[in-house]
Image 1 (cartoon, helix red, strand yellow):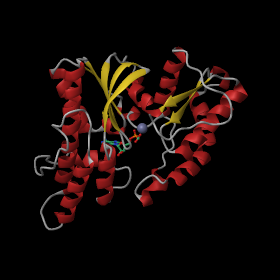
Image 2: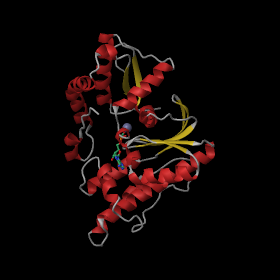
Image 3: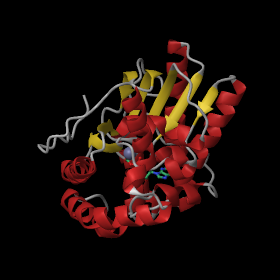
Image 4: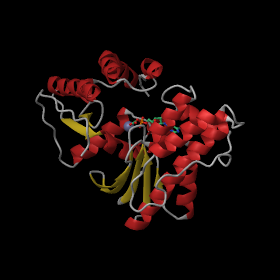
Length: 306
Ligand code: KG4
Ligand code: ZN
């Protein structure tokens, strides 16, 4: 994979700084494209479609990607498709080569999103519920920051959690039995931070704390997924986004789907986090269903998602 991560630039701030993200996007986009062309040995003639994330996200970063994509498509006369970042995540499981089946219940779980959807086709979905406050990955990153594990902390926390005992500490599972499909993780985040404040006076080990935190998050995610499957009657479950790389979540999903004879689609680990391949795939599907985007240079990137 050709990639350029930005962790280096953001880690001293403990989160993504939008202005820094835009500047880094601007600095790396041309060299990154050059590296991609060298590595894949593709020529520009072999590129038949340009897909670009148009929403939702940080506006500055989106605009840089959009400007690059529009310029490329104008200069080389390639069709252009703007893609919803979350639709990209939804299709990421198919990058393993296995087809996603429809209708399905999909969970996008990342640093910015916790969204449960009823998906009827690659371009047709209904939002069942989302988080009212923090996303699951945001809680993991916040606690990772308090523990001094860098940013984003998901992969490192996962590694540590595997050695811990999730039974040691009982953390709240917010809204686990509530009606509907909404999530709320801010109460869990506060409870976990308070435990850490007291930790110095107790014998709680870091690995047991992290394992307990992940177990609380995963319990809620699985409970809501089960409820959504029951209510929609689908036989396929699709889980994507950075947190879908989590070992405990994957293990619990495989166990449940195996037991209940549901088909599980989940991306290979390298495609769980944000990546260009999922955007290319989403653009391809959108193009096949007849969508074309405006080639004018008045960029329309949109920070929100309706
Ligand atoms: O999808 P993504 O790359 O970016 C967003 O769209 O947010 O997801 C990043 C999130 C971060 O919160 C990161 O800590 C989390 O995914 N993450 C994980 C793991 N790997 C990444 N969380 C739990 N376990 C992991 N193995
Ligand atoms: Zn993402």
